[in-house]
Image 1 (cartoon, rainbow, N blue to C red):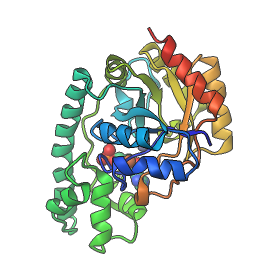
Image 2 (cartoon, helix red, strand yellow; image 1 turned 90 degrees about the horizontal axis):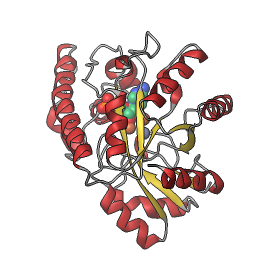
Image 3 (spheres, rainbow, N blue to C red; image 1 turned 45 degrees about the vertical axis):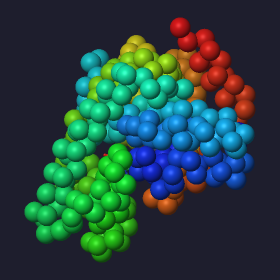
Length: 288
Ligand code: AMP
Ligand code: FE
Ligand code: FE
Ligand code: ZN
């Protein structure tokens, strides 16, 4: 694989420090990679510096969580799926992106303790301080809560933590306020980036026409591309998403969604070939 354009560091819910990712990417045989932490660009400077030393091409990125239910003209019944928008080639100093990041951090600071509270009502006692410790003080998310649940012996795995307690619709799940997809796309553009629909399978859209409708609507809001390759995508999905990208004239991306030891996704397991990456660079160069 030439490049892997989807990975997380300790700046969000990955387990490798941003400055350690380039060596791992080189070890995986990659020539280029992107760091795409949830809701933060905090890891980008350290990762960029280490990538330069390692002689790798680095794409500064971000992955913003958006609300699939707030898209006017989108398909109905979308409230439960996951809508993530990847931003590529973003300026980590952009004030508009920084404003969104601090809003998103506040939203997490409200939701996370509420989820710990709900767990306690269910007889599952964990200390929010331990969750913060797991997170290392950066973007705090459900995977950190899940890890504490495993550590305390309440569940055997992170998967079980989501299924029983903190996954969408589970007993202790608390929904957080999310950005509208249009806001997410606009902020990425403001920061000079390209906006890409992440892992479309996680939208959990039962009918193929719904994904087309949603993606077309996102394109009207400025979407530039679709992540066709991802750890969660079967070969049939990749082909389907590639055809959709072609029909809607969207650029294609791909990546592993590596989270270190917190997920099974392996660095470099999927991504883009060189020619595809060059197309992405050309799209960026052609952006107004
Ligand atoms: P948050 O943004 O805090 O709501 O958490 C989202 C993170 O939880 C993302 O990194 C997802 O990959 C992860 N996640 C969501 N559902 C699951 C699941 N069922 N098992 C493991 N990780 C999950
Ligand atoms: Fe994650
Ligand atoms: Fe994601
Ligand atoms: Zn991700």
